[in-house]
Image (cartoon, rainbow, N blue to C red; front, side):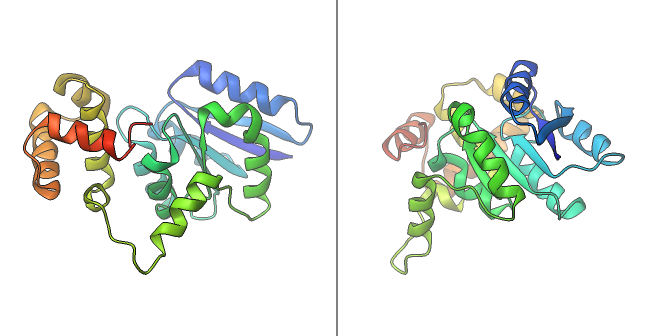
Length: 210
């Protein structure tokens, strides 16, 4: 039996994933968590064959949680589940230690296949993500401005470009307004930009909002 841990702050998403898995006789969701603290609490007393983690959770993000898991539970395979396209977070997730990256819209058709492939020792990589990976190993590949940002800076950039207010972003990420502006100023400096409008246009032009 493949034992699965699901970490997503939305109960309806967890329920939907459980229903997909329930159709398989050799798989079962045996643990659920709504945030990073709950993940580690469950892992203290339970064993899982794979963890499915939402990339966008309150407080500690899915990428931060993934990095901590790789330190504390290095043998636990992780599949990142995301509403964002591969262009936005796929490469970052794989570099952080995930063995797969799956968009939520693809979960009904691809989740079971992804789980089986990862549990059997492989990786689950979609065609768009595979093409992006190929670009990163090309000798002629040069980093774009957004690729020098830290994971948290990148997350803040995407939220700014989506039109969210400083207050909402701060609340979602559990950081202070001051810390938000520190991140924003650091992003502007690294990317040589001066305004949210300029940043938003960059995100749109590079299709990072898809």
